[in-house]
Length: 191
Ligand code: PAN
Ligand code: ZN
Image (cartoon, rainbow, N blue to C red; front, side, top):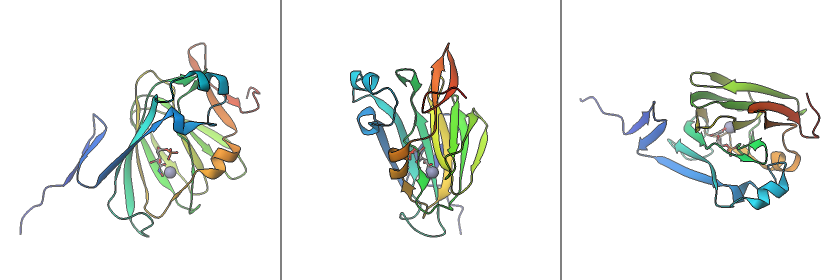
């Protein structure tokens, strides 16, 4: 019997996965149409601008019950108008599936929204740990000027429901004002 070396590595400082069973995808601005509030600013930007990328260790096939996925999300710094770059955001398809996020580098905000659209915003920074309960939509926002890198672990049968977010959005958006992040209701009210 021998001691087997891991076939996959998580480079903790760099925030990268390497080795076997890694899949990755990049999201460009063109794939985020309708997500940002300022449609004119969006149309003026290069649609090929990368907004974020996700690396994932796919240990089992999607929808396998009882398995786990491990991912690294890397959001680039940037804004559409005054609104910071962010992920599409989603509920899990199986609504009761929970997830862990943890901050690796950079700073940002993790938005939670429950099924009644009540929003909570958490600061994400290196070392911050976030338990995302089931029935909570989640979205990452990069409020800094370097990459926001966040680790994630979630059940392999969770699935992703993007449609309800594309339809109704999050009730709260994160904008830059005087060099600092501020939260505003989507209807432009201050909260
Ligand atoms: C994460 C997210 C990742 C990208 O792995 O999928 O941050 O965000 P969107 O999926 O909203 O584009 C996760 O929450 N998985 O469940
Ligand atoms: Zn998720």
